[in-house]
Image (cartoon, rainbow, N blue to C red):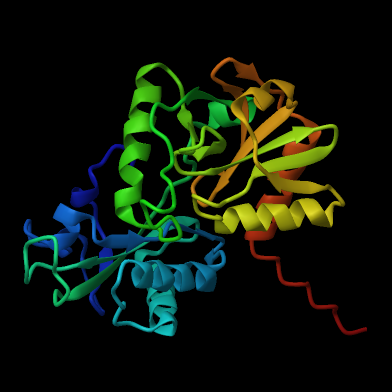
Length: 300
């Protein structure tokens, strides 16, 4: 499937309550969601046939839509069931899932409050967000030109498609320079996040991470914080200024797509792929994968 355009793949997509052939999952060019970014989405992974934290993702999808002023006309239970059936129909065990909801095409203009709300869910194989060889030695990040906006100017608590425009611009610019991704500051000049993942730093055995007050408090972010605390590692959420990166020993990103990915470089700052980062990579992998069923003890 590598390199095959997404509109030319085989299989099925759940679209407005029904499973349709992959190639038939289309929307009109005058859909409001395309022109005015009135759409929200989720990125989810399945491991061993189980969707990790499926319920949390669906709850956030509904919450994101509400922030943008619309209701998704399918219950969370119905969406969760559709995702499970989609995995089965697609014969996928380890997969990436993309639910997306958007305003339709009845009205074309800034205001489109009566437009139909559509929902689609697709699933496909996607082994790693970053190149495996880069991930093992730590990826390199550029410093992004664009910044995460002031919460008074954008609905940051929604996983809204429009908020990713500056992320695409920043990642493209970084890739042209030979980097894997970019680190974004916020409007105040504080360290925020990468283009599609949260960031953590390590110093003297403690983990430091920016307070998510203008970017998403990711589901993977919260999972990894829990794993670190279970190991007895202090996790400090605070303001982090760019110049502080010179003092940190380790750095890693977290996200559904990125999972736990070590970082070796951010602009002029260098980091090692140390023991804490490696341990959390292992812990996360163990957490997301279904536990094998206990073997039955044979009767004596």
